[in-house]
Amino acid sequence: MASPYAIRIIGDPVLRQRASDVTEIDGRLAALCQDMYVTMYEAQGAGLAAPQVGVQKRFMVYDLGAGDGPQVLINPVITESDGECEFYEGCLSVPGLRFDIVRPSTVNITGLNLDEHEVEFEADDFLGRLMQHELDHLNGILLIDHLDEDQRRSAKKALRKIAMEAPSGVAGLGAELASPAKPKFGLFRS
Image (cartoon, rainbow, N blue to C red; front, side):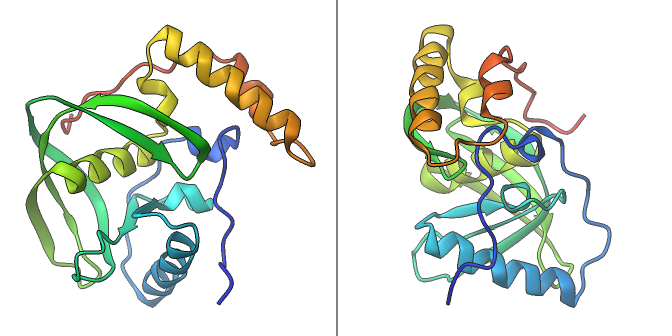
C-alpha cells in the first residue's frame, strides 16, 4: 500500500508551528492514525507526529518493533524528567542528517489513547528519546534546534547541498536556513 501522506521536510512552515490539542477522538482520528502508521512504516520510522504529515494536532503514532504493535499518544505531556544522555539521532523531516543530541535520559509521560483512556508511563532509552523527539514536533521544534552553533552551521551547509541536489529544490528551505536557532522550550507543563 502506498503511503497516503508525504512527510513534511524541514523548510515547511507547518513544522515550525505549535500543534493544537486534540479535542475530539473519533473514527476520523483513528483512520488518520492508520494512515500515519502506513506512512511511518514506509519511511522506516519508529515514530511520526501529526505535524510531519501536515496535521496541526497534538498526537503521535509510534512502534518500537518490540511486538506491542503500533501505538497512539494524544495530547502528550512530559510531566517529569531526570538525568541526561547523548544519542545519535535522525529525523524523517530532516532526511539524511544525524546528530548527537543531549536530552533527559528518563521522562514521565501522560496522554490519551484512542479509547480516550489516560495513559501514564515512564520512558527511558529509545522510548524516552522517541517521546521527546515527537513531542518536539508537536511544539514546532526540530532536531537542528538542539544543535550548538558549530553543529548548526554544518547542518545548514549539508541542507543547502541537499536542497541544490533535489530535482525541484526543497520548498521553504531557504527561509529555514536563514533563520536563527529557535529557543529551547522546557519539558514541563506550564
